[in-house]
Length: 531
Image (cartoon, rainbow, N blue to C red; front, side, top):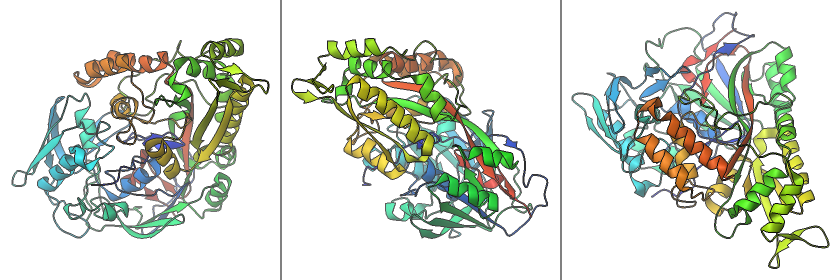
């Protein structure tokens, strides 16, 4: 059995990366778009932190999944507008409990062996088996889901363990690995068993990851041509934690792409570089409601949020460009787009915050620090270091407000593997400022309900009956038919101050001498290199 150390799913531009569907943003601007296509090039992309394990059955970290995007093919590709393109499968059908995929002919693994329907079915069953402790259970695969492959017919038939409104999108977006590594977590952690466009060639931890294009890969989306000009022969993911350094490397042409979200954005924008844009969560608070934590008390959660100027926080974390969220799902296909946030964000009222803590028994001492029954109100907030200077400034702003309220509060920036470890294993936190980025409302369910960490992915130990009831109702309805119930589920979280989203930011990946589309990472089949 694998060790249960899930790597955080889709934390926005900062950490938890929960996206699984390929919501490609349209290209914009600049360098390369009007050039001459070039073959045989190396595409070098900056990542801000080492991805840790690349095991696609275990990791839900955005940085790791962005590399897996190059290594492992999917049954389907979900486009920006919600339409579905072929991947490993060239036809499909589904309702909320069953799905059938018909595979393309000629699919192979990185070692040249055939990729069969039985192999694909084994991937799905493996994830659905609770014994394998995959954090994708509830996220993309419902508990107890199984699949059967018919190798002669080339079909994979999936039976969901419970109703899933978005069964075709969820199962279709799973990374499929070769049978040879299906039960080998050590091999998967190193990116082996590739079924996708590239194979892993070399790993230098905390430095770079080098991938090589497969000559036999021909199952890009729809009628994708493997012989077209401009496809890279090699891809390098280079670890560069400092955004200013990444910007300098991009502008000098030493790297081809980098995510730039801080003050350096102005420099790359003025250079007129090509870029893709995705609106993602930038600012959000989630509170640890585990037994014994002060934040298990809603009165404390309410007080903490009343003490913070969210408008000022929004300006800081977005460098003046952030917007007010309308919901917890931000990227395509996002089938339910109701505004669930308006009217639910706490209003700044420091006096009310102090009174609330007084009423909850947390009284200020002679030093101004609050205590209850001899216990000091000591809290720890963690946030992703990927947010850079803007994240640091926002964290310091919240810390100052809470100190003024009488809270002994520490704030700590952590890299992605550490964030995952703290949220999903040690549980040593009270406030998380690392938002989740998802493309479907169903993807939030295992993070806000069900088994708690370390036995599950409900990292904040949320137990909200209204949320669970709304999710149950929504899950029995196909697609957007359940949108009213999904909206009610989100509002149940806001009403209890369990999750407070306060800022969305535009996540822009800039590029030189290359173009591509992007969703949960760059789509490798979309990369075009230029002279």
